[in-house]
Image (cartoon, rainbow, N blue to C red; front, side, top):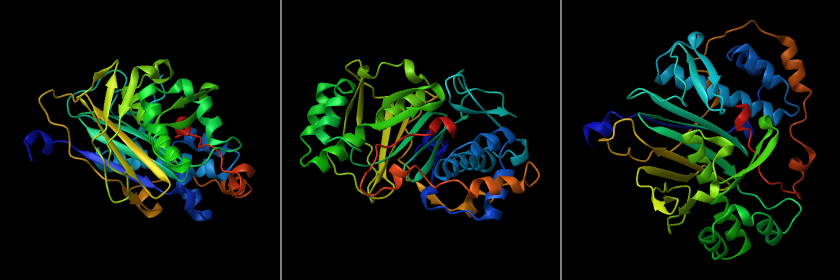
Length: 328
């Protein structure tokens, strides 16, 4: 391994919030370990599923900053850039949209389906997106694809529609795309899993024309035991060799893509691929320390929440995935 690669740092963490069933002690302790405004925002979610995902996302971020950047938990102050990307406001006053010094960390989180995920890289830009493969809620696959027509290049459509059965076409579709509701921006936005990982890495948000991007996927099958890095991105019909895309499966239903690019050291090599590590709740809070006093009413409010909207609990009606990255 070259010296430049050896100096790189890579973190890939996943937490299965869908199967997390916190009791009173765990939920109240988690609430004490995030910033007060984060706790308040999480408490406003109508459904427990969304509150758990947002809490997991914040704990992932704080664990990363504490353990990898060696900043005491109580000193961490997280903010969001004007474009919605999380950054460390204190003690390091550096926004991810304003450029970074060599060898500083870039980090990003995503939630969808049953997982919250974090990807971080030292000295490079990083974006991550996770999604759950599901059938369209009330429309047919054909109608669903028709609605999505304008969001794909002709090449991408040929790849999707040549995949085989409808289920195989959907699987290929979800490798390119996920449905992302930008609730905090009061509008919906369609992003590809690969495309969204890139958009989140560069931090341009809704203003970027997705038709400028085209992905050429590896012909290898994506399985749980294989991490693929052969996908190529074309920007304005030009192959972008400076960008690396990692694709993997967290389980049979959840696909995750990581975008890496534009190292602050132009002579360094791209880092080796890194698989996701599945964390437990005990892992999330291993380095945590309370920031506020216990609030018993916070548990009383949480335990009365429905787990998810009725349509998400109905096994006969599988909805399109919705992202809550904006709330993480």
